[in-house]
Amino acid sequence: MLQININETFYNITQAHPNLKDVLIDLGFKPMANMQTYQTVGRVITLKKALQHIGLSPDQAQKILNEKGLEVTFYE
Image (cartoon, helix red, strand yellow):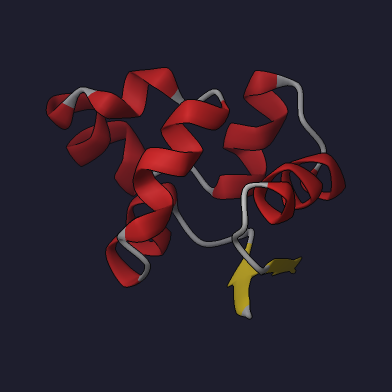
């Protein structure tokens, strides 16, 4: 099971767990598919802020990721 600190940046999380990047993009982080956006915005926005931006709570995102077969737990 992956334990992810939602206060880490999108970039750091996806660098540590590359298999999450495409899944998170499909979840609603479409701009992160653009490498320039990923390299700039991804380095400063936390996963918590990014989830707020797309209107998902951490619990909702965790449930969706678990349904997709990724055992993920978010913590602060």
